[in-house]
Image (cartoon, rainbow, N blue to C red; front, side, top):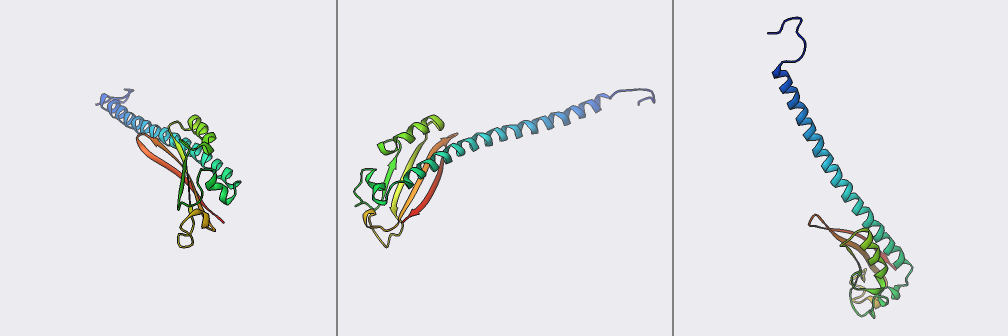
Length: 151
């Protein structure tokens, strides 16, 4: 029992207070870890989106036929896939990815927008252009893509 003049906390009150404080600190630490992970992932997506948009804008300046010719094709294929790891037309973007998102690569995929209209790129009036950046984050594959149709 406490006298009316006694001040301070009993051992039980102190233990309960410390337990509550410890549980709150653990919860806050967990939130900080989740926040740091989300911030990291958001930074990666932002860098990938910047590269995807940049490649897309560069391709927008190329003519219809130039799209597949620059990637070394004559238009007889139904699909062309170019990759920053091996295609000289995308070499500039390889350097950007190496700097901004190490271990990643970009792909450009071209195909007729309407498969019934044409079975090869050279005969297609409209072309589907898909630009993607692929990378790994904590052993999980990630992909960010932008797809448009050009006439």
